Length: 133
Figure 1: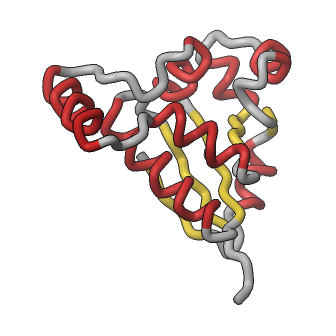
Figure 2: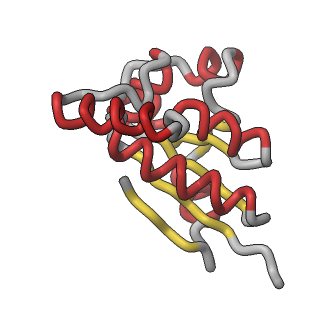
């Protein structure tokens, strides 16, 4: 079976969106698919601060507590695991700058695997499955 590409566009840094994005990305990567997370805005800022996937509301806190009780992994660990399986975490260079972040710093600290232009991200979407959170 041919490897397919999954592009996951993540703009929200809270628990629910992060859990959906990373659980699907980890599953796809474990099944041999090419996975690319494209981080933007709140998700990118949270990722840079190390708070990606932390609950933002009481509802998300309750869900995270239930997840812990179920033994479900947290979003940050699923992102790490999927990246260890070959998934990439990238962002648009303009979006990085709009967020007030330094592209070189994000790469040096391995927060992202690549900072690239929107045309390159657009090319990656060709024949890919697309998800947005």
